[in-house]
Length: 79
Length: 222
Image (cartoon, rainbow over all chains, first blue to last red; front, side):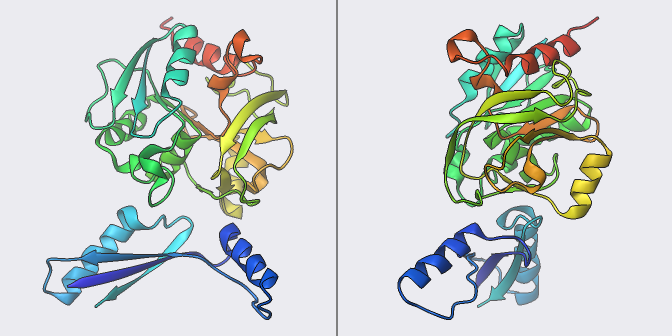
């Protein structure tokens, strides 16, 4: 079973890298980009066969390591 | 007075930090990240600057989950002293020993220069050698020193007098210009600037020496 974790900065936390990307897009002539937020995608290869158990396990991984929940939020996709 | 300085793959200020502790009179042991216990009788743990584990995932994130760091968390929970400088501060926030988080500098630039700091409290073993409100110059060298704290946390840090140092001018977008904070029991200090790089005359600046002297002074058995 595979899991995909999306880690994004929480709303309200300034994303300096996203802002820099937004400026660069403007420089290239892409107009109308109101905001850019940059995050991470983490793919996990799991031995698990049970979907619910796998999701619970990945949630624990997110809480303990994959995301810093002070500034980041995460979404888990089991695929 | 016994100090332990942690060494992670990618630490690069470990020997500088050890030297500063030694010059202040401490007996220093270097401790490898894979060790699971601190040497017997350690009074203070130094978590050095650098780029532990290549800053993979997030600065300090992997180091914060290393075997030795578990021992450091237990040490601080027992009331032991710890000093985290730069990457060491990031490690301490990643463990949750200190609140908040350190993000990419708001200007996206790696800032590497001496910066003016204001000493916000003299009420700690680390800052007792300074006067509240005193301005000192200490070098910084970081890309991710933008301290993030929400309004509640800043209010709490202020109310508990736990902001140790602030930047006298904005350098990285840090909330309330916070450069260093203390734990609730005031025995853990995390700061982005490098006092060990301004600790002896050959550095051309000794403003950081008082931090090590006062810490060691506080820890010498009476």
